[in-house]
Each structure stands twice: as C-alpha cells, then as structure tokens.
Image (cartoon, rainbow over the protein chains, first blue to last red):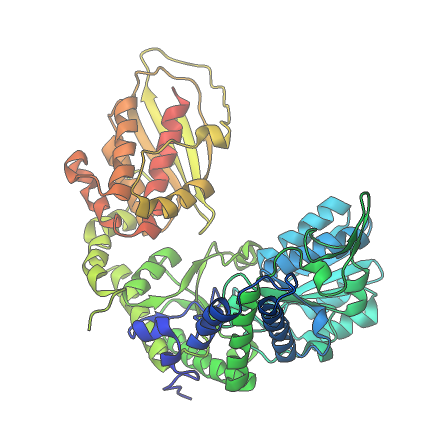
Amino acid sequence: MTVSTSLAPRADFPLLAAQPTLHYLDSAATSQKPRVVLDAITNFYETANANPHRGAYALSATATDAYHGARETVARFLGVADADCLIFTRGTTESVNLVASSWGTANVRAGDEIVISALEHHANFVTWQQLALRTGATLRIVELTDRQEIDLDQLRELVGARTKLVAITHVSNAVGSITPLETVVHIVRSQSNAVLFVDGAQGAPHLPVAFDTLGVDFYAFSGHKMLGPMGIGGLIGRRALLEAMPPFMFGGDMIEWVHDFDSTWNVLPYKFEAGTPNAADAVGLAAAVRYLEALDMVQVRSHEVALLEAAESRLRSLPGCRVYGPPPALRSGVLSFALDDVHPHDLATILDQHGVCVRAGHHCAQPLMRRLGVHATARASFYVYSDFADVDALDGALRAAQAVFATA
Amino acid sequence: MTEPHAAPQIASLSAMYQETLLAHYRAPHNRRELPDATARAARRNPLCGDALEVAIRVDAPHDVSQSVSHPVSQSASEPVLPSRSRSHSRVQSRLDTTTSSSVQSPTAAPSSALADVAFTGRGCSIAVASASMMTDATRGLGRDEALRLVSVVEAMLTQGAPALQLPESLTALRAVAPFPGRHGCASMPWLALRDALQAIA
C-alpha cells in the first residue's frame, strides 16, 4: 500500500511548511507542533494569563477555567471519566518519578519484588532500579523474545505473591514493539496483587488509549510526543491509589491547611501539583489532543502501519540492513535499523545532509542495546505528517550513505 | 527555493567523507595493542557507546621501572579546554561532560618524547580516522608539543582556528568543524591522548 499523502496536512505545521524539503523522521523523540497548538498557547498568554486558583478576580478565574478545561479535554482523549485522576506533570519522566517517590517509598519494602522489562526506556528502568536499591526490594527484569518483544512466558514466571509492582512500557521507544497490555493485565491480576504502571510515552501519541477500560493502575504520558508543547504531560492513576499516596512535592496549591508543625493536603489532582501549574502548556496540549481526535486515532494508527510497511520493505532490499523489532503490524511507527559497515553516527550525519532527520544512538535504552549486542541503532519514526516522500527520501539517503562507505 | 537545512552543507559533507578520512577509517594506522605503554587513557562517548583507548610509549632518559598504576579521578582528568565560540560550546560541553575517561600510567620523565602512539577500541568513521591520523601526527613529539597540538585540534574543531596552525597531515580533520554534532567523535582520541600525557607529568 502506498501513502502518497500525509494524514495531517504539512501546511498545518509551521516548521514543516517552512521547510518543504525537510524529512522529519524523529517523531519518537519529539513531534512537530500544529499551528492550532502554538496559537492556543499564545492565546492563553494574550487573553487569559493569570495564576490559576489564586486570584479572586475575573482574569484568574478565566485562567483557572482554561486549565481545568484542558484537563477535562486530555482526560476525555485518554478515556478517563474521573478527570481529577489525571495529574499534570512535566512529562512521563516526572510521572514515573512521582509514583516511585510517593507510592514506591510508602509501599515497597525489603523482600518485595519489582518487575520491569529489558525493553524499557531509562526513565522506566533506572527509576525502579534505584527504588529497589533504596528499599532493599529485588528488581526482576523480564527478558525479550528474539523480535524484541516482552517475553510474556517469562512475565508469567516472574509475577507472583512477592511482586509489589510491575512497570512496563506500552510501546518501546527504541524498536517500536507494542506490549499486549490486555495479556499483561491478565497475568498481573491473576497472579499477584501488584500495582501495574504503564509507560505510555510512545503509546498515547500513536494508539487509541482508554485508561478506564485498560485495567492498569497508572499510565504516564508526555505531551510533546503527541503534538503538544514540551514541558507538559501527565500521570493517570486509580483514585484509591492516588488518594492513599503521600504528596510528591510540597508548595503552593497542594496544601489544605498549614499548621506550624503539620499540614494537610488538598484533594486530587492538586495534591500532586505543587506550585504554579503549567496552564499555558496544558491548554496547548488540549489543542493537540483535539487535533488528534479530529484525525481519529484509529486512522493515525493505520497511517503509521502503512508507512512502516512501505519503509520496511525498502530497507529490507538494502544489502546488509538489519531491522529490529517485531513485524510492522505489531510495532508502533518506529523503524530501528543498522547498516553493516556504516556506524549509526555516520549514517545520521549523511542522512541529515539529505534533509532526513533520524535518531542515532542508544535511544535511552542501554539495557535493550546490550541485549541486541549493539551500542547504537539508527531510528526513523513516523507520525501524522509523515508521507511517502519521507520514505523515498530515507531510502535514497540510505543508498547514498552505503555508496560513501562502499569499499570498492 | 533554497533549502535552509541542506544545500549549503552538501559540499562540506563530501569534504568530511573525503578519501583521506575514509582511507584512515578503512585502514587505520597504529590500531594495535601497545604492551609496553608508558601510559594509556580511555575515553567513552555514552551517547553512542563508542570507546577508544590511546596508549603512548615515551623514551625516557633513565629507565623507570616502577609501574605503579594509579587511576586518576574523572574530574581531575577532565581536560581544561580553550574557550570556544558560543555557537559550539553547548554541544561541545555536553560531549565533554558526558565523555568519561580513565587513565593509567606508570611514572616517566617529563621531558620524554613520544616514541610510539597507538589506539584500540571502536568508533565511528570520524573517531577512528581522527585517532589514526593522531597517531601519525604525534609520534616523535615532546610531551608539551603534543599537548599543544591537542589544544590546536580542539580549537580548530570548535573555533575554526586558522589552518596554518595544523600540521598538513591533519588538515583533513578540518572537514569535521562544520558539524558540531561530530566534534565529540573527532576529539575523543585527542582527549584520551591528553589524559595519557597529563598522567605522565
């Protein structure tokens, strides 16, 4: 199948519109932003800027409404009926750290077990590794299949009565593998009382997500990977868990009463949102998810699969090209690969000169790279504004790179 | 219409992947063990996992038989680089701070000349070519001369310092200067050499 046009018009994205020959294939790192998102942020500052929840004047009320409205919009997009269970954070990394610091410190003890996978981004790996070191809990790492998918059989073996937490990625940022969350939920629920944390940084932007029906306990996401601005993202949690958790940070807004020697905490979501909230970027994120809703996440997914299949068949025709991960139907829009005899750094530089932006490196997934037996891979990643011209450009630039390094 | 991201640099790209650099990459000079090294130092780039170790042997006026290895702490071995242009400092300083190093050396006389320079490890074409050219360019230099050359290469990469300061055998490295993202690759072996040289001070 060919995808001659993008799902979203490039004209909607000022950066892409200004650089018509740019082939931005690094959306797994961060996405480009549509005009409506930039306008929403500017509009907030131009018409509604005041500190939410603070002032007893109309403008502050406008800012408060805009911030609350953004939360409800994002909650609707991610299938959360109880919007107060969506905590705005700086992004997935902060969300993981919030749960590890707050829930982890309060609940994880020596002798407990924390289960993660070898597929994880460092944010969802190191955070739990350090919690285990701090508490004396045991870290268990689920290994991968030879297609870099989480080995569900091994997950079944590892999850048990001692398991306090299972933290797993929805989609691998490095190779794109999609975790079958239904199966993971079934394993975790039927074999343990563990809390299930899902890193949705690469899931929320690319797959339809309905938290309330997923059956997981926590789901973390980043706005900047889903057309929103940098510096805003969130943590969704079950109300009972969030209410029982101690605060993560202290400061304004998160308190109820401050006595000299003790304090009480505000209700959800404010308990976990200390300090002046990032209202403008929340409003920007809300504009981003409205844009994605209009595109329809089912269409987003099929658009990416079509691009991925097209690109992968091109890459497989290149001599000495290895593609990592499961087949495209089981992957998000990520193409992680290596060319024999061309170092990923050299590859990225040459591709850049052809206007093709790809990531080269360990993708913040060193445990996975070790298991692949490589130090780095090149990664092309697609999104709603990607099209067949991007695939063509990638293919052409890879052939040019091979020509440079061909040993005559 | 113009292509702001690509057109001006196509020439630089072909310059960077010119035959000189590629020839060094394909058949690196002095990529070998140096069992009788006076000092050796490793540099790693955690961003890509590349790692090179540079080993040097110096001609000492007196035979120095004590071979006491003393790992130098990372902060102490972090080289003080010459000031750079603002546009490059961000990329470069990130690479500097994330490039970890380790140094081992026995003692040696400070006036020693480099009798042999070799390297081992893995790297991209730029790192390997740079290391290969470095081993040629520094053999026979005194310690201080070699340290000065490290600074010249650094300055050339990050400040575009005049070519006349650079030995002819290294002029091909100038092609890397327009690529801030690759300065760390080119400088990795030189920083390792500096670590090794400073360890024999």
